[in-house]
Length: 448
Image (cartoon, rainbow, N blue to C red; front, side):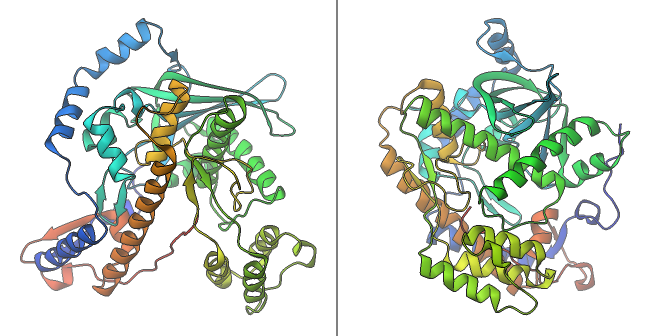
C-alpha cells in the first residue's frame, strides 16, 4: 500500500486554522446575517430528519436485497476509486476504467443513487427542492440533503458497498467518440478515496496501488481534453494537474452521455444546463482587453473563434497574466442557467446539448435528472420550467453568499483557502501568537 500520509507543509499536515472565541462569534454572526439575507436554511425540519433516520436503517441488508433480487448490475468486481479535494465531505462520483482488446476504452462513471432514498412525495424531496443545492462556505457546509444521507449512506465511501447509477461508455480509441452508452442502476464498492494530491502521487509512482488504472484513465482524459479544446470548448484553466483533468473530463463525458440519452434518444424534458454566448461586441471587448495586457499576444490564426483565441492565448501567456485573462472573459460571460428546453446549448463548453447528472448529493438538477432517466418521466407535480428558474436563483444566491463570506474572512485576517482546506479550531484563552492570521486570494468561477 502506498504511504499517503500528509506531506510536510501540506494543508493536511498543518492542522486546522486556529482562532479565538471572539473571532468565532464574529464568524457565526456573519453567517447568520448571510443566511437571513439569502434565505438559506441552516437546519433541517424534524420531519426531514425523521425520514432520513428511517431510510438509513439496515443499509447493508437493503443493498444485499437489491443484489439478490437482481434489481441492479453488480459492479463490485470493477476496480473503482473516488478522487476529490482533501476537504470533501460527500463523494458523488467514482470511476472505473479498462481497455478492450481492439484498443477502445471502457469508462464507467458511477454516481450516487440518491433517488433510491430521496423520492417525490417525501419531506426530504421537498426540502431538497427548496434548498436547490449544497452551500459550501469556507469551514462551513449547509447540505441539500440531511448529513446522514449526504456524508454516509449516499456517499461513495471506500470499502463499503453502495447503490449507484452507472454510466458505462465504450469510447473509440482513435476518434474518442462514444461507440455505446449504457445507463443503469448498480452496486459498487470503491477501493479507495483519493485526494487530488494522492492521485498525483500515485501517477508518479509505478509501484503504487491504482497506478495502472489512474494512468489509463488519465491517458483517456488527456485526449478528451485536447479534443474538446480543438472543437472549441473554452478552457480557462489550461494548467490543471492530471488528477483534476481526470475528474473534469470523465464527468463532462458522463453528463454529455446522459443528456444525449434524455434529448435525442428518449425526447424527454429535463433540467438542461444552458450557457448563452456573449454578443460579438462583448467578445471583441474581452479580446481587446486581453491583447492590451503586457506580454500577451493573441495568435493570429485563432481570432475567428473567441473561445479558441482565449485557449491559445492562455497556453502562451506569462503566468502573471492568467488571472487578468480569465477575468476579462468572465466579465462578458452571461451566467449559465437551468432550462427545461436545451435550446441554445452551452456556449463555453461548445456543447449543443448539456445537463448535469454527476452530483445528485449536492445539486437539485442532478437529483431530478436521475429520477427522469430512471422513471422515464418528470416527477409528479413538478413544473420543470419553474424548477429550473428556482434552481438557477438558488445557485446564484449560494455563490454570492460564498463570495461575501470569503471577503469577510479576508477582512478579519483569515485565508479562505486555508480555512476551506484545513477547517477551524476554536482555542480558548489562546496566546495571540498561537492563532492564524494571513489574508489569502479569492479566485471565483462565474459561469461553469
